[in-house]
Amino acid sequence: MSNYKHPFWLPAPNYYLAMAVLTLLIFSVVWGILSEGEEELSWLSAIIIALSFSFSGVFLREVLLKNVRKRYLINQKRLDDNLANLRIPHKTDFRDGKLTIEKNTEIIAKIKQMSEAVKVLSHLPEGHYEVFQTCNEYLSLNNKELKAVGAGSPRIVVLIKSRKLIQRMHKFHLLKWAEIQSRLLTSQANQKVKAADKIAKAEKALNVLESALQFYSDETQLIDSRDAVNKFIVSINISHLIEQARQSTVEFEYEDAINFYQEALILLSKEDAADDRRHLTDNINQEVEKIRQIEIKKSKIRRFTPEISSRNEHQND
Image (cartoon, rainbow, N blue to C red; front, side):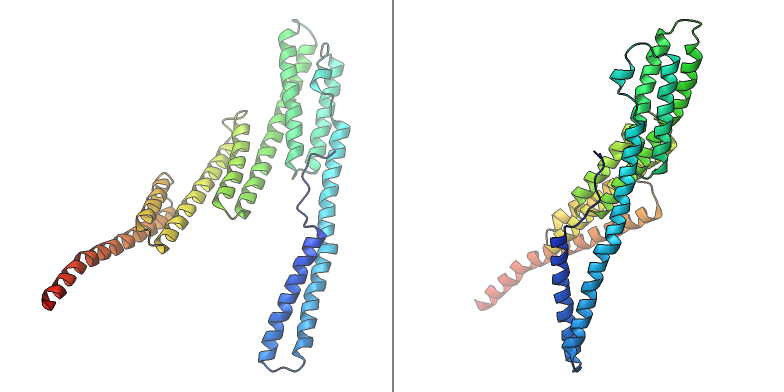
């Protein structure tokens, strides 16, 4: 059974219900526009346009999207089948007894075949992760065998050579998995609407990169990606704080607005002094100053209002 998630696919009843609603909406809008122009048979033109939209929607789902989805699932199944055929025995099986040269050769051949199979569909992160895990298991076994092997054994040269080969594959597939998976999660984060949902997805991407850094802590690619995701998370928080500040301003909650803006400024102060960051900082400071000016004006009004009332009362007396 496949371990991969199927691509999103809206069920037919939901899809066609949405299409029906949109078709009626388009018919109403077009008919209304054409009727205002006193065009003859405006209702017929509106029906033709609405039906054209409806037929296009059917074609989109039943032909184009189905073909795209079918190709995606075929690719996933192909990778599943390849890995199933090439999967080496579980570690509890091939660790039974001594790792002979023959058994080692067989395992290395299987891992190499798995690696090549995954490279065919290199855009799927799960395959890379499975090869990485298999390499990790082998390296653990290899290390154990090297500690136990007797001096002068012909297995030493074979095990050392195999370890170097698997180490390269281990690194390659781990980095590929981290790259593809983190990019996928970051893309999903961008598609979310709520800040909390964006951050949740971005943090998953960060966890992927952090887990890879546990193996290759000095890898520039991983470090740069981690820094980029961290900046992305900070930018989400800053945008959310600015949005909260603006909403508070609309609701005349000026103190809350200033607090939100100040939190955003604190986050910005920890970022690189890039031009866009400086520009955003200047904009926030301007907004804070505007709010403070409003508060000063309100304070003056409150101070002068009692004086005016007192004068009016004195004149009445």
